Image (tube, rainbow, N blue to C red; front, side, top):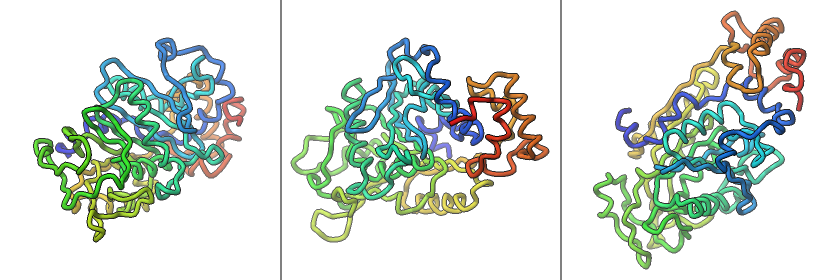
Length: 370
């Protein structure tokens, strides 16, 4: 585990902030209409986030002074890239969901620029998790990241990707085609897979062995292309081994080799799985199998098992939209409705029922609308 910490300095910083408490997330999500008119934050006063549509995808980003790396964050279904920033004149539709805000602030404090993108599908707001040739998102994301990097001088520094649920799936798939965003002397450049024949026998190379990597014919010299420059955090997402294979190939995702024979593969980036083992035992088994696969393949991998959190006034106060008085009343209302056990844990999954909304409406009013 210690060696993984050294390989993934930009990922482990998220250990405490990764799991959004479901009830708090839903309450805050429902507050869009009331939050949009709030005053600008310090972030907005400093000119952040930048908000732009790039390649038909809403893109938001924020860059600290002297950035040491980049963190791309991918939302789950029914969410958007605007969830990661508070509402402001620069982004009136931003929500500032508490756990997303915590992740963003933690990354910025440690010197990581944060880039968030809204999925192409704005009906379900899920990501199109399929082969790159059929995915509206995977066809666009590498170019979006490259454009942001070029605009704000982020070329040549490590890129990490973090996704939740559907977003966890898209970052795993993005890592499979990560050569589309390579680190080079001149920065991040678009990469067409057929321009580089796959390199036979690609191994996981230590940093000092980079110069031993064969140079692709007809391309500029690559002086700093290392699997250690990137990493993946996949949260609450099925961990199938087929998503942990980085393949050379065309835009269809089908592997190809330089001689037309058996497929060649490059190293998949280090990966960290975050999951609710007690709540989702099936996912826990998948993560166990995926880590075994990574071990056999030489891919640095680890997991964080997040235990359930009791619903307390302190937990609800993580949202700036809920006052101390409302937080106490909300917990009491959930207890009276039988939605919490004696220890304060939810007795069911709030995503599958509106009973929590009905219990909280008299207490939180408009925060439960929408």
